[in-house]
Amino acid sequence: MAGTWFISDLHLDPGRPAVTRAFSEFLDAHRHADALYILGDFFEAWIGDDDDAPLGQQVASWLADFSAAGPALYLMVGNRDFLLGEDFARRAGATLLPDPSVIDLYGHRVLLMHGDSLCTGDTDYLQFRAMARSPAWQAEVLARPLAERRALAAQLRSMSSESNSNKAEDIMDVTPREVEAALREHGVDCLIHGHTHRPDHHRHANGERWVLGDWHDSALLLKASSGSTLSFEKLNIAK
Image: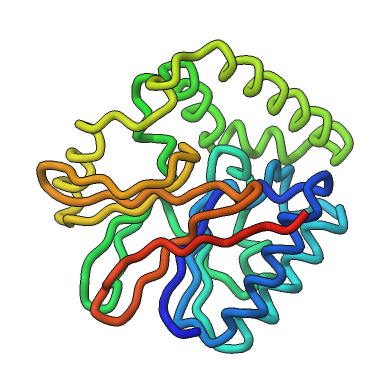
């Protein structure tokens, strides 16, 4: 199936085998695609490219087979897998994209983001994001033993879950003026992002915004065809 696909927020984790299986089946079904963009939170947690856990190694192998079949493959980190780096991308046959990135989508310039930086109402999270994206902080974490990093990842997930349960729903969504500012800054009229788990197509004063869905019982995937026509396609995830 030709075309270019955009997905995010799979949150791959050993405790969610149905999602991992669905992703493997998706790759097998789309080996004739032009490209696949994975826009962050690919993994539920990522403790470094030197992680020897079976899931990461298996997924890297699947991605390498997929990209070897012909499609271009691109990865962007999210708020869960911000330590994912060039070594994993190399093993997967993928290109690691900065957040934000502007791409040429069949002759149409499109802005890609994970989406968390647009949630400016969540000031506590933005403070954590600034720390977690700091090269010095990342280097300090990556220097720790794997077991210690696994414990830290579990602690951060627990803290995030507890914090989010006490936040108003609108705080965890994007700020519309930040979307419009990003569109202006990059000179585009189309933005694709994930993060919020609220898949939808939005119109803004200066462009449009496509929000990717998370992978749970189902997922909404975004497909672009030649002519840059965008449309959602639903993927059901069998338990």
